[in-house]
Image (cartoon, rainbow, N blue to C red):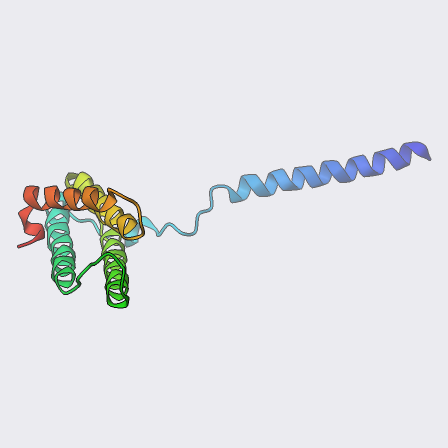
Length: 151
């Protein structure tokens, strides 16, 4: 009788363990978030680069145009606080638009610097010292190297 009491739980534990391992092994390679390869359009590197230049250029031109209409102050009055909120919204929108682009290898560093620059400016508006200057410098360097960002 005592042997049955020990054997039954041992068998249950063994079956549960085997079931869990089986489930883990069979579900490990199933990733439903990846679209099938036949749905991904094949685009040449030159075409990807041209598309990126066009799209990133539009996004950054829009950023610079909208930024011109926002007067950023030190936040000591209500109007300045509203403008800072507008700029934060613009920074967030611009970053999200850039992050939605397919980035060719040629422009990976540029893309990273644009995102970092916008993020640094955003951090500065939230109170971190020296961040806005770093961000503006990254964006300025990018526009000097790639003038199509502002043309």
